[in-house]
Image 1 (tube, one colour):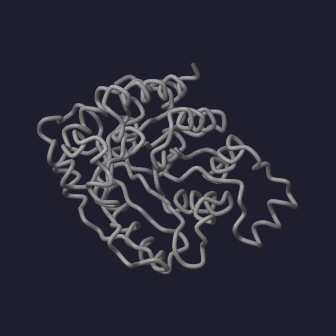
Image 2: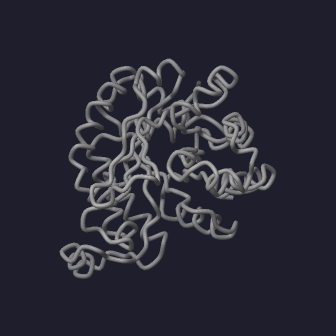
Length: 308
């Protein structure tokens, strides 16, 4: 695999990482139609666990089959496919080597009553990821939750083991719980803080939601206003999140969120590109559409991230 200059530049940012972890990071960066550009589109399918199978797949019944998601990610030319243990295992032999995969190590579900101490259960291991031939592992933390410190310690142990065994590490960093309001979960100051936490915890790839211009924390609000940090437009907010991730020296992909119209998906991608973000990690807006519509949408996203 001949690495592009852009991918070599990105890998140089990850000083202190194991050669194996950097190799798998390169594997994802060089995969698919965006291979070599430093941009990424990843398909995550953990919504069946998080929200329930009917809520996730009934709109497109073909999506009940894990093979459907593997094939969609492959045919769309994406950088990686991320899913929980059972879903990845269900296609691991059939699709071995066809696309880099990311094993989601922890999961929550919509039946839980946890709010203030939002948490997830560890449902897979590093050994599982190695057995399934994954390029990386994924983990979710909830900055702001009363359970966040335990989550950080869990991530520390799993991340150390993953990197020692040559796996890249992806961290979903979703502010939630504690005193954070619903609007605060996507407030620019909170999302940027969550992204910085993920970088500081050692994530190779950081996943956050697209931020709004709302400012949640009063102390932070004073700084944003006094220093006139530009956050009026979405590209400006994306650029600020990137700045908070070691001055744009970490890979950050932004969640696609709930299902919405194509134009909104494209507008988000244009903003991510303009703000210097690395790309999208987009699930429901893909697999809840008919296959041909999903492929068309993903192909357009790829073209946006190519700068076309």
